[in-house]
Image (cartoon, rainbow, N blue to C red):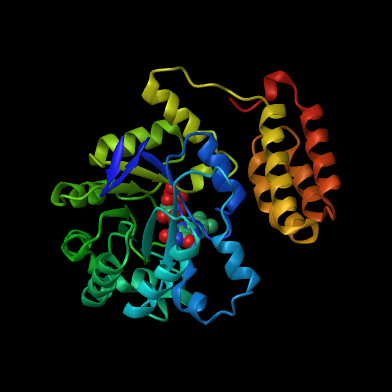
Length: 331
Ligand SMILES: Cc1cc2nc3c(=O)[nH]c(=O)nc-3n(C[C@H](O)[C@H](O)[C@H](O)COP(=O)(O)O)c2cc1C
């Protein structure tokens, strides 16, 4: 369904890298629902190389659950050698199928060092990073970019062409400038302009919140694939919807019990992996997303946010299920 260099993927809608969101259990759940490729949260190349071997935070970012399917490693950095060296070292011990370099993050703490979307203002450096990584690594190297730094510096087509020329196996374009952050709407026309000029696969990204949005983004831009970020939060079923769309099977609605059973499984996996004291606070945001739209969710969120144990969280989920009336379920 989508081929990135030697990597054959079974579908066209992938899970975006999202720091603080796309943890290993969540990636597994999205894969089970049909995501053909998922991405780690962004990882600092230099941070990885400098961290002691037993650094828990680094280890956690690289953890993958068994059965999670094709997983991409996303790195950020500005140092040509560090990005390649970090990727090489990580690939020695982890079965990532692709390395993606972050050239789209708008956060000042990332761009201040010249990384993330700041690389779009230094095409030559970005090209050197890609060239070095592509020649050093056995897996495809891709980049994720925006449509420019700001409206005055919109260089998506030229930038993407330079990345292709440097050896990128695919590019993902988030249809916003860095200055826009996440505001306004993604410019799908600008993504389409990139797609029209590149020979390598292009993935369109930005504002695919539903199955219909994802299909519309793909149709509008002609992109080979679509990357879904916020639309998957608390909603890994979006990938099942896309799988069904492709197979010509009607979408399937889930009731609250089924949705919250999956939320509970996410919690269980997080507890098994990180231990309860770390898992409970980390699951709060996910729980809020899973509960969104359900009757009584706002009040339950307050209780979930103060829950101190996994049992308390599970109790909240069970109570929320019992609060639902059939006519109040989210469609
Ligand atoms: C909480 C959050 C964390 C993100 N972290 C990353 C990241 O680590 N790497 C990256 O390339 N993009 C990151 N992004 C951007 C998303 O991958 C995606 O480009 C953006 O959300 C637009 O897609 P969407 O409209 O489908 O959400 C993040 C976005 C959000 C909301």
